[in-house]
Length: 497
Image (cartoon, rainbow, N blue to C red; front, top):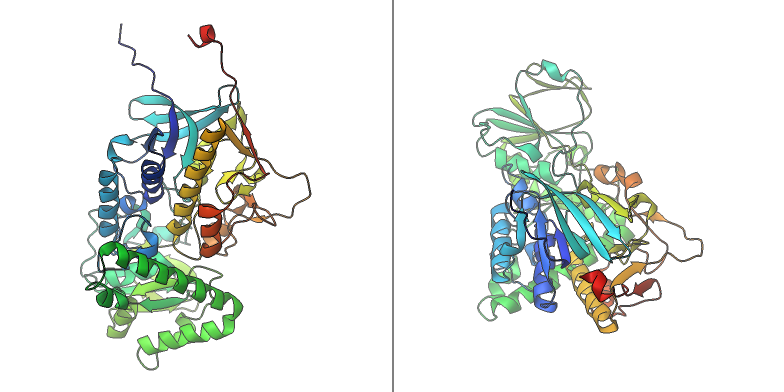
């Protein structure tokens, strides 16, 4: 008879996903709750999440790394806006420094998570290459990100079959795609598109961005100007702290100005575009969105690389509606024809909360869209589940880092009180609800009906102010009236045996 493997020990925390949020959570547990046991399930074959998945040319962060990196681990590169390879190296360093790599089980796709109130435990089912595995834990920290890792958003275009070239999506970039000396059309106007254009232009004969609606695009220095002044006098830790705090304030002030004075800030952005582009460039056609700044996420380009490529003629922009694809490219509604040998559909992401796993409570399915978010971390009525949802108006991980620290404080408080189960309870009063992400980006709007909601006041709101969140998560009251703590009844000794 085949040998039956021994049952896995029950973990205190099971982290789903080994990207920047999952590695961060594990590091915080090591630092703040070293007595807690944890494991990480990762569906891919390596850690890194986004920074391991995406392989398209030029992929980089569109946030500065002083705020995108962890608070506890300095970002030492000179590049404040860094390539995916640098970010991946940083995550690997963190995993090795905190002994996290050995805690990761790769090739595990979580398909179901079921909570047992009697046991106070989650049972997690994961698919592997050789079957399924069962894991048991007291807490789940879902660090799977917010989009579908399997499929990007890919609308159909009229008469696609007529195109004689290759159509690719950045999320599934072919390793063997040869675009050197060829004409490339990039459909899209977001962060992926503005990243691809200057990178593709290094080899392509010409790159054309085809956009239906413009985005706000701003140049930022690839290296923070303050870095050179600080390095001779301060340690790497001190430099990281100073630049991180500076970036937090810059992001906050810029966001608040955009929301309070949208017309004035639209003009500021326009002047920056005019300054970066050749005289006579049609800025109002290609860089004049119909929405206010920060209704959707702004695009930042390091050292103005996109504008340099538009200036030297290696890239161009066409703004308008796509009518159809032709044998040799794209025909626009106004009759313009964009010649292309390769078409890249940088058309966005599909949102998939919690990695698409099925959640249930005592066998009853959980519908996330019926739940309210609590402190941006938990869901009402769902015990011992934390989900990582970061900022949309700033670096994603700024918020996730605070959530991890609050979770550690919560676990410590529960231990002190001898409690095993924590569940947020929605108040009995009528509550006006809003979308989880108050953001007008297409990928968010397409998914709103499937996402949890936020309420009308603390602690049921998704806050977007780092200063307030820092005070609440690091120093605020941990156990509030909306949280219910209970202990799992001890089983008789003979039953346990």
